[in-house]
Image 1 (tube, helix red, strand yellow):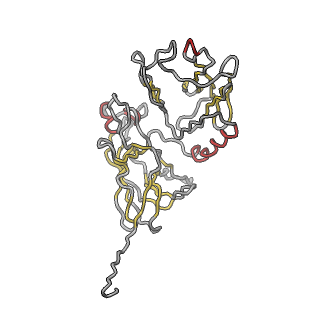
Image 2: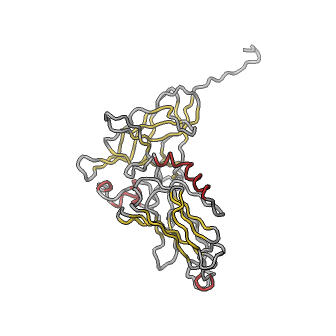
Image 3: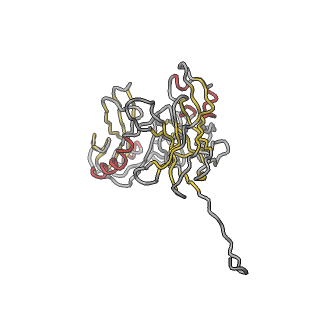
Length: 340
C-alpha cells in the first residue's frame, strides 16, 4: 500500500503475516515494512517496487535499489507466509475462498468496506515463489526502466482496447487489419483532447518498436465542453490507414500525440491504454472531468456497473494491439485438359 502526503512525501508499506508472529492467537499477526520517499513520487511517472521475504527478513526495493530491511519476527526464522482464513482461532474472515487480486483489496467482511482500489496505473506484475537476490531485482528493473521512465502517463488522455466479447463494451480499434494499397478508416475509443493532434502509428514488433507507417492526422468525435474556456474532451478518434509497401506483415498499433509546433524538435508521445474498474477511472479530479453528468461517466468509459460482480467488461484489455496490412493475391486454377 502507499499514501501520498500532498506531494511532500510518499509512504510505501508492505504488510505480511508469518507463522512466528502469534499464529495461534491472532492467525499470524501481520508486521509491516515501511519506507518514506521524500520528496514524494511524481504523478504520471513509472516506478519499480519489489517487496520480498526470505524467511527471516522483509526487504523493499525502489527502482532497483534496496531502501528498507526489517526482521519479520522477534526470533528468526519466522516460518511461512500465511493468509487470513476462517480456520485461524481468532480471525473473523470470510467463510470461503476469495480471489487473488491485483490493484484492489477484496475484503468480503459484511461490516467493512468490501473493496479498496489502487489509485494509479499498473504495468507489470510478477509473483515469485522464493526470495530474490539484489542482482535479480536490479535485472528486473533494468529490463523496462529505459522505456518506462521515458514514457510518462498522460493521465487525462488515453485509449481503450476492446475485443467486443461483451456487447455492452466497445470494439476498439474497430479493425485489426487493412489493405496495404487501399486506405480505410479505423475507429478508436478513449479520451482525447480536442485541438490536439493525434495519429495512428504502426510499429515493428522488434525490441526498438521501429515506426514503419503512420496515418495522417486523426479526427475526433463525440466531444463535450470542459469547464475551462475553450476546452473539449472527446471519446472517439478516427484514423485513415496509410498505404503500406512493406508487404504482409504483423505490426503493432499505437496512438501518438504529436507535440505542439515549436522551434525545438520534439518526439511524439504515445498514449497509454487504460482499462477501467470503477466509474471514475476514466476521469481525473478537477475541471477535466466536468461537463458530463456523473451518471453518464460510467457508460461513456466502459465500466461494468454491475456491483454484484465488480468486474470489468469481458474483452477489455491492456495489451499490445496487433495490426496487419494485407496484400492482394491472385488465385490460379490449373486446367488439366489444356494444361494451362
